[in-house]
Amino acid sequence: MTALVTSILSPLPAAAQSNNAVYTFGGEKSQEVPSGEDYAKVAENEFLTVAEHPLSTFGADVDTASYSNIRRMLSEGQLPPQDAVRIEEMLNYFHYDYPAPKDKEPFAVSTELHPCPWKSENQLLRIGVRTASLGSDMPPRNLTFLLDVSGSMSDSNKLPLLKRGLRTLMESLTEKDRVAIVVYAGSSGLVLPPTPGNERETIMQALFGLEAGGSTNGGQGIQLAYKTAEENFSKEGINRVILATDGDFNVGTTSQGSLERLIEEKRESGIFLTVLGLGTGNLKDSTMEMLADKGNGNYAYIDSVEEARKVLVSEGGGSLVTVAKDVKIQVEFNPVSVFAYRLIGYENRVMADHDFNDDKKDGGEMGAGHRLTVLYELVPPGKLESGDSLRYQEKRETKPGKDEELALVKIRYKPPQKDESILISQVVPVGIQETISGDFRFACSVAGLGMLLKKSKHKGGLDYEWVIKTAESSKGNDRFGYREQFVELAKKAQSLDN
Image (cartoon, rainbow, N blue to C red; front, side):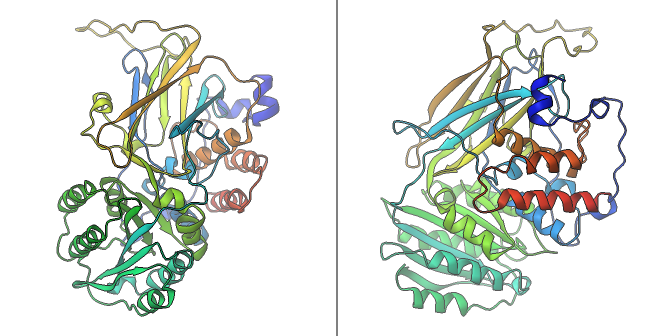
């Protein structure tokens, strides 16, 4: 282990980093999927050799639902199911002090390279992407709330919590904003026609007059919500449908395929989608993530009024104001500098390499002030053998790149009102940086907790003590206490997984 890692990154003990180390974890039974909840199966990314796979391509994802859902389960004394743990959403829940874009550029890209703390012979590359902030001048907002008022939403942590959470957003609206409320249960209806944002009493009466009851016809509700938003489209403002539900679509348009097609049709109108998940015991996480991905939107899980305020008010620029759509990221690794790599997280956003340049292929959405964090574990040349030679094929050779370059990061995106993509790129230089940032260390601890909760075979010698110690030493200017809360959650996970 290098002196740099020893002094700065608080590495794991050498014995713990051995590939032969054996660890026993308790709590397996408590990681079963809660009754009635549904999560998409996630196959963890594996290491790929640069000779065979020089490109790593995926769609941007700034959703945060997985982290707040994990927080809910840990707070209730339960380890989350492994498929509920999406490491990219854990990473992107937190803000990092990445450089801001300059000269009206939509993105700024920064990188850090250091020894990998859970396997010292490897390296860990951090790519940070930050979008331009909105500032104080919020554009006019045309917001159509699509609220699930079916019987399953009657629990205190569903519709009642939603009402209190939305109140924090309503209090920030002005006369230039327009708000409409569509509800759905056995049928759908418009309970509040588009109303100026400063007419708070009218809006609050409609919101707090809602009651839960009946089955869920989500398909009809989505159609009416988009129709309402289209009729009040703001050419110079924000046009967004905000869907709040536990995801239990059980009447009407219910198949995942038909829901996907419906959302894909509507996203072309320039109206984007925010999905808010609520509740326990009936959470259809896989459905809500799919809706957000297909609708050029984002997905957050609301487990408290404070989380609603974070998503819709304090970080409302990112959640509501789209600055780039169909964002795709492609990293080309230099075989002179990297033998193999593993993308940590983003499993359900991985794309075929040739789709990067295809403007018909959907990417992800990024809002104003968003930070996107990407981690790659890298195997330097000479550290691994590539395995037995092939009998019937010749080994494909990759043309060596420049010795001083580690990789090339490319980002392709479309401005919100455009259909033709723009390409930006940045070279990642070779070489371990002398100084490691607190943000890098904290991101390592977040990824580490994610790998422990997923029981990842790539976790090396990670343990909870290292995660907690590293996070505690890298909280920095924790204005809202989110990083301190993470430390407490890691301690809770440790006690449950013991």
